[in-house]
Length: 168
Image 1 (cartoon, one colour):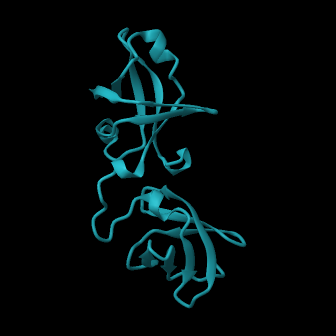
Image 2 (cartoon, rainbow, N blue to C red; image 1 turned 90 degrees about the vertical axis):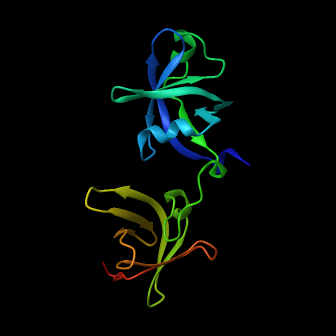
């Protein structure tokens, strides 16, 4: 598997204590779920390293982790700013009708009338509901409401069918 196939799940944001623990900013939902994945692929610029998670916990509002081979504060400080990735195989299988965002990125998006709108570039949480960012001849932001705006998702064919006015 190439590094491009990995999924970004967080970032090392600081150090915790003097024994090499790191603070982690997690993109997972629930935040502490990041601790259940091991190993992590840590990447910063053109450097990368695969590292095992030895221990971890919630510490107040922060998540802290102890990583294999990181035994003091200076080593931990050297990891600050490194992004945390996992392989897709580490994720549990999504339930029927549920999708990982990483599975949706790159899907071809078309309307129920067959008009091509472009490709899913990203998804965003907005508070009210998630939205799909579609890049085509122009950028579109489509609410991710399954059964309403999102009619069908077919990962095998790489298509997302939407009920959306192509002029909007």
